[in-house]
Length: 297
Picture 1 (tube, rainbow, N blue to C red):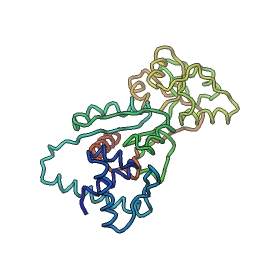
Picture 2: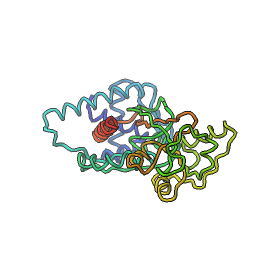
Picture 3: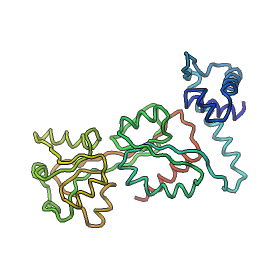
Picture 4: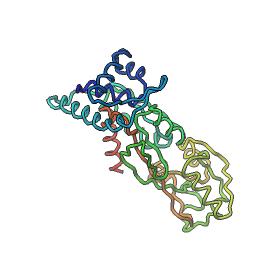
């Protein structure tokens, strides 16, 4: 079995399209078709179901996936063994993430990643959680870095997860800053700046407020957490944001975490990729760099 054929199989399985795989691999469509047919003949099993223009893995094809991945991974490691480490990855790295994670967590690592992989084009897609989940299912992104409750799917491989506290914050000079066990009713009397509806931690706040028979009426809603922090610092008010968003301003003494008389809340930042994804060298490097960065925090 040729490693090239196994790599072609993985790309067809990932893209669910012979045409797209051929275009990405630089082969003709006929050449890819022949490689898949030869592999099926060699294994004695059908790897794909072809219905009209659609192509999907058979049960046998799904079972063969991890073996093909291991074969290609071992070949790549063997090819790199005698080298000095000067070989640089090429291609793209597509990351789907929330805007807050992009601005507060990923931004510092991207210049480092570029220096390590100067020939890789990094593409960031931001969106709401439902959009991001759809993107990884459709292979529109290589990695998905998102914030939500602990989430698991048989379609994903989870690389790591980290708890992210969600804090009530206000300017350091706010009348409620430094007070203990502030009643939620009292906090809701202040002007609130919140993320848009549908964001996971915003939903949890709404549930908490409703459980107390109270009402949440923000004077501003926006998906841009940097804008929320800026308005807090310039105009005052209270917000409810992930700690990684507000930590720099808290450390600088410009914002204060408020001590409200309610249960603490947290979400989880999670990095995943699709189970059928062929892990590229740039994916491996980025995963390692991000884990190292977050381990230090």
